[in-house]
Amino acid sequence: MTPPPAHGPADLVITGCTALVHDEDDQIGFLDDAAIVVHGGRVEAVTTTPVVAGLPATERIDARGQAALPGLINCHTHTPMVALRGLAEDLPAHEWFNEWIWPIESNLTERVVALGARLACAEMIRGGVTTFADHYFAMDTVAAVVAESGLRANLGAAFFSSQGPAGREASLDFALRQRGAADGRITTSLAPHAPYTVDDADLAATAELAREHGLLVHLHASENRAQTDNSLDRHGRTPIEILHRTGLLDVDVLIAHGTGILDRDLPVLRQGTGRIAVASAPRGYLKFGWDTTPIRALRDLGIPVGLATDGAASNNTLDVWESMALTALVQKSTQRDPAWLTARQALDHATLQSARAVGLGQEIGSLAPGRRADIVLVDLAGPHTQPVHDLAATLVHSARSADVTTTIVDGRVLMRDRRLLTLDVPDIVRELSAELPALIDRSHGKRIQEYEG
Image (cartoon, rainbow, N blue to C red; front, top):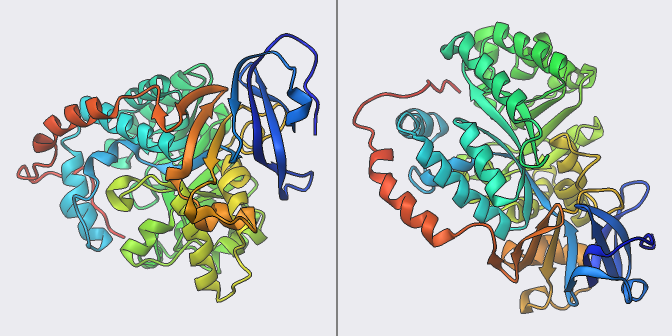
């Protein structure tokens, strides 16, 4: 416990909560009757409520009966795709992409992107997400929404080799222009779509640009076993081996999904000299009938695995809380081991592992002095969360995103007592609804790309 320093009033003091904390070995524990002191957008102290009883503060929150957690992180999504939620269901991935998603995405306008991103940000704030990693189009528009919403984000402008050099150049231009925007809450990445839509030359050039400019690379790879088998048939290499060959495993890279990672890929990943991470979105894999991300094998390699939702067009939700619960359950099932993944391990993946995955492991992901004050409060008083014998199990297996009462980013309250303070959902829904007929028209027969997985 760190006592608050002696200077002027704190910006925010949260008292009476049970705080999720990490020890020196990154193991999760809980501090009862905790107080969190925030100053200048950062956590200044995590101590006990009696210690701060007389501390001057601009704002105080009495959080008795609630748990305080680091804000959740959605490590891979496509926020504007909430506009397509539930539009194409119960289909194999190739039909879902080729007959529905990519034809409809050819109709995208900046207005639809803005409205979809706003709705997505509102959903994530209500679900306790304080940071997300987005990989999509018209990302200057998404960046403006991030600034408006108050959230933190890593943003990458997606590109395909079919666009020629201009696609890669536009992704770099966006990354350099928007890095540090929204009062520093925006970080950026280069965002090649995937090895099956971006050729080796483009991937190698992207690796060089990432190295030169100190940028993360965020892309899809080995999304499913069929994609890996197709890559082996066409190139004699798995997608992970292609990333290695093109130098992308020697820079900071965030790999979305990885459910098609094979045993032969594990020594290849071990050879990588960059900071390699994987984002796992289990709900979508269950819907598509895919395998799941091999978290145990990746964890043994020291590779952070962050939690994600993917886009709401496939996942139907941006609920990272659900991803946390599903991760624990699916891992137990696939490993045939009830002792893996534990509730505390699931919380680790939702917090510090996810922070490291998006390149912010020194800034967010834990409640500790010096970290950004990204905090969520969770009500534990509901009948479905009582009694509490093991708080970690309660949070992972009993609590739901709807139990989040307060969401804070950089010390700023974005939701208080379930009321959004930065976004107006009814207005967003009304405006988006007017855009939907033109958006979902597929009569033109165009598509932005071809899915071959």
